[in-house]
Amino acid sequence: MTQLLKGKRGIIFGALDEQSIAWKVAQVAHQEGATFVLTNAPIAMRMGEINKLAETTNSKIIPADATSDEDLTKLFTESQEILGGKIDFVLHSIGMSPNVRKAKPYMDLNYDFFHKTLDVSALSLHRVLQNAHKLDALNDWASVVALSYIAAQRTFPDYSDMAEAKALLESIARSFGYHYGKAKHVRVNTVSQSPTWTTAGSGVPGFKEFFRYADTMSPLGNASAEDCAKYCVTLFSDYTRMVTMQNLFHDGGFSMMGINAAMVATETDDSK
Image (tube, rainbow, N blue to C red; front, side):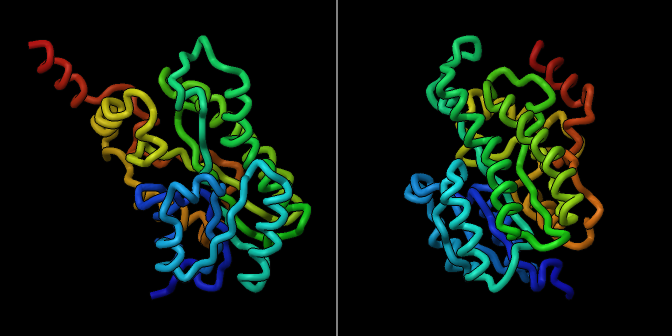
């Protein structure tokens, strides 16, 4: 059986633990023949189990703060040395909101926290792409995928300032996708995933209830982290060479639904 990513080299940001989508992407990419470097912020690495993932995927780890140009320069330079050439794919799976962590109401946000949310969760994608471009670190036709969420387009009150961060993330993917596409045929896309039981996602207030709501509303149910990983790998592959500047919904159909008969039945049963 042909491996989709045989011979390809990558960098995967954000693998924290076995629940994280980035962790699953690393596992699937390894199965599909890729070699890659794992990276995360030093503080996140102390909290996670990334060493175990590195062992099972035969990968090296390079700590890097994605809000630091110095760290990113080091990451791209050392990754090419370790992997033996330029990079073919990058996964950006980075998001954090101090306002959400500290349960700040949306109409009473701390703006220093808000700036941190945007810097970590969105501007980091621009930094990653800008540093890669300056270093000429990506191969022609390389693929960059960033993980997003439908709150970039629709209102989910408890998602707070992360909604603005995801909207900015998607805009950066479109804008940089144009410039990098013209320069090197590099593809840049975002994947808008279902609510997923990850360490970060489950920290949003009301997540359990919304997870159940989305699962009922979606005709296919919520997409799992494993299925999201497989989708991301197809976007890293040569089979999607002409897909760029897109926000691609991977959510079991939730994004296209108005109402679902199952939801009506549930509400009717609850009212009895």
